[in-house]
Amino acid sequence: QVHLVESGGGSVQVGGSLRLSCEVSGYTGRSYYMGWFRQAPGKEREGVAAVHSDGRTIYADSVKGRFTVSQDNAVNTLYLQMNSLKPEDTAMYFCAAGNFDAALTNILTARLYMYWGQGTQVTVSS
Image (cartoon, rainbow, N blue to C red; front, side):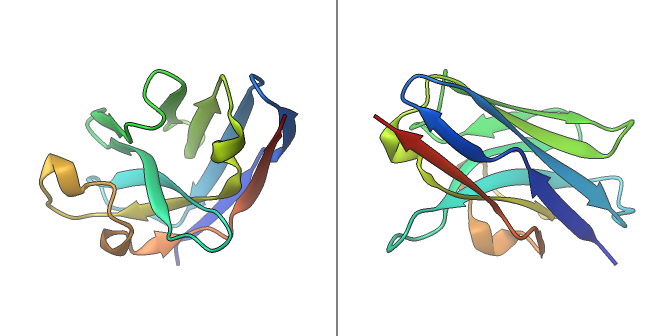
């Protein structure tokens, strides 16, 4: 059984930084996408960043240049380094995993991901 557990959320002021972690267990596939998504109250879940098992990464336009997704396969952990945080980054952040074929423009589509964590809250205040 696949489990994803996020950590690292919290409250930070505008311009600050946070690093989210997602520990993955039980996933045995060699090929995968691991992604970060977020959902603010009253809004749809949106893709933030993803990384493929071959190292390719993709980012939403809203976070390019500020967020960095990475993975440490030695400890089965996915990371999201978030810098220059803005109030609009406030949301519940989820990590997700899946194995699928998709066009580059569709990789940050939530419904393609089979496994999800419970989320960690990020609040950015001005």
